[in-house]
Image 1: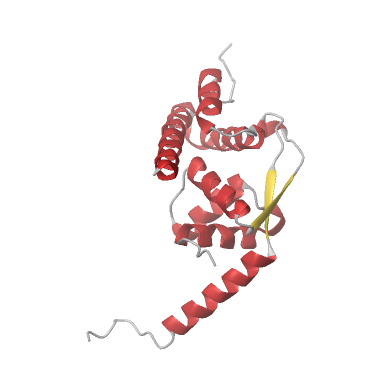
Image 2: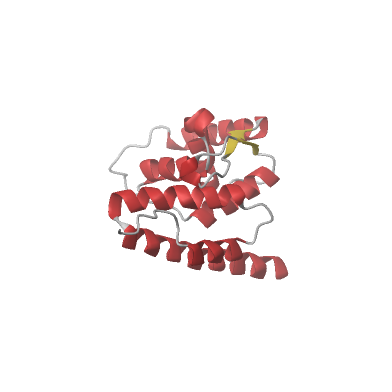
Length: 72
Length: 107
């Protein structure tokens, strides 16, 4: 039977948790899941996974930019 | 008084329009509807945190839903400070845009 799991793949979910850099991320992970599911349903799994990868990358950029600003 | 960035203004106005349904996912969709582009989750979250820290927003938790993997929703609402700030911004814009006619005349 084809895998019908429409949640964020676990490895990406863990990476998102790692790069979110917040103490309380439960609601944020819920937001990511909801948007992922929306993209999955409208545009398919590949687009949804690409979106998650982009979010991971952007989270790192946002964190680094904040770190640089506050260290100056 | 700390001035709001354009993005923060747009987020506050999105929250105003969303009323009781103002949480990150809906804010993102409202911004897309108003501006034509999606902002990244981390960018919106960073602005929401800053707005809350600077007393423009309050937040409260909603019920978890299955679509969110059983995780609760964090809703936002405008504070009195946000209301005052947006009122002032609107007043400034109205004065500045008064009698502006397109195409603009060259000076």
